[in-house]
Length: 137
Image (cartoon, rainbow, N blue to C red):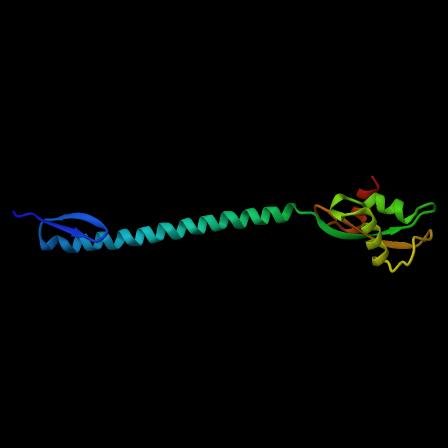
């Protein structure tokens, strides 16, 4: 039996006869397919990992919501703003300006019994009754 040494592209093989060429071709064909499939699965898993992290980060981000507040006797725009202010709102003076703009107020004067809209940041959106109860605590 005569041994023929042949260098194949991509791998070293030792071929005995021409009859084994088909087995070698099929092995190389399925090996390439398996590598492509492995890389595709790896890429899919990595993309799912990054998408999951992005969704988790988006879930934890505070959401800007608004609530309606009934002005009580002795309340001022500043006292109401202090109740709902958080660092996400930015500068306190800008927060007061945003409340004024939301309610079309020209000055700092508000009247008891009236309602104003107050924006605030919450980790989860809430309905108005829950928000007012939680913020007054």
